[in-house]
Image (cartoon, rainbow, N blue to C red):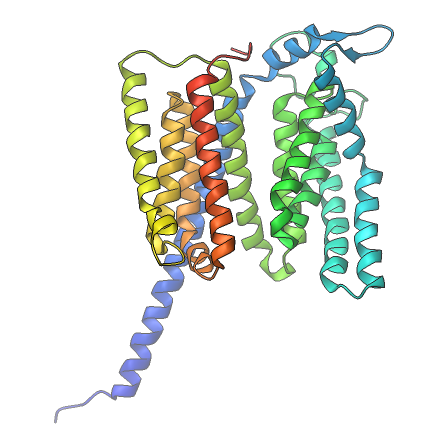
Length: 378
């Protein structure tokens, strides 16, 4: 007697198998993205570590130490003082309280939520930074006079350089505000970066200290601005953005402090970079000249990846290329959802985003062409 399988049961089985396969694929993609983000961060920090002591020595050379530390270059002095004031914990708390009060008085739930989340992010960032400061025990720049890295757990004053507390809480608050008010995101992040720069110019921290603070701040803000059940996803999202920021800062410092490699390797990397960046821009042509609202799916991801990778190759630094490559892979692993969201953007928002992208590419090309070796940090 021949047995016949129930078609409905077979369909259910196939559907369950397909769902399981998709879930496994998503998990594998998340794990791969997490590994790539961490690798990009590690490479970026290794690269930035090369600039710690050259930058500190330069800051010392333009600082008068008696009767108090004062920078002799006006814009550096202004940045040092203004950033120190903005990054004060009490001032950032005041911003959070103001958002909370205004949101409550005028029945603006988004403002109230932003106030609560910035306070939460500030608290998380403060706990993490203060704990790591004494666990790592890195001396402040003014106590270090050699090129050696010194780390030892300590509660002593002056042995609390890593990470920068001002930078950590500033980026934590900025991350929440950028997520709540995307139109003001670039401004919020720029202010936090201004605070980070001020800490280095003030001689209070090494560049890796402020970058460590920025990473912790982004992670704190990402966790605070997402539902508790989504902490894992928000943490990975924060890591991806922190990796991109770290690699971008490293690439910028490398370009501004090194001349182009004029050997065959440099020529090959520049050629590769030009082809990759041009290909990435070509893939976005429908955003500018086509009738569709946005490039779709893999095309959008490939475009961003090729542009970033091409610009990194034009620095002629293998370490920059590797770090940016891993950061791009991290975003590629999580790119589908972002692309679907982009397709829902309005035409005006799309044009603004594309204008910012083109402006950034042009600025990067200008730095690569005319900004080589202008900083004495090699």
